[in-house]
Image (cartoon, rainbow, N blue to C red):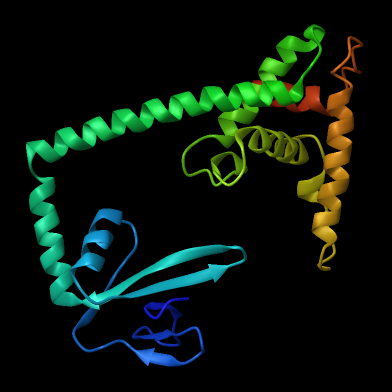
Length: 229
């Protein structure tokens, strides 16, 4: 944690440093809430500020940025004026089109990677397409927070992880399991379910037809019935 990054303090006008010390927010400062990345970037570049973050589990959430109220208001006014111009509107529209294009390309790449991981026999090609589309639709939306959105591992590994995660929730009783709150137990259960999921997938990598009561087919039929495919 750097010198200007803190966690929430015990009172609304305080913050806690990495060493546990409590600091009172300077007089004349205001809290800029998260949500406007452009304004936050400009305000940080304009002068002194304190970042407030809160860690929950493995994720860190922004709680806003403290800075002189005058700096925040001046920066906001400047940015509002810029955003009201036609040039800015055109720039944003072009950026949105680029993002949509990149997203569409990624969705198709991810879909292809899922199909490649499934590697179903041609006799089950339709099922593979149906499953890959269901997983892709669930995993790839921007902001979904799924493994498909990470850039830390290759897309092939993301696809495999997304398939196993989807199957864990759709073809096993994982969501209803009462897992003991023992360190490592949930990870152990996930590994066990992953092995079962891979065994289930292997049944479709040959020409034989698994039972129609197969949990995978039941899950896909349910999604189709609910219009979620």
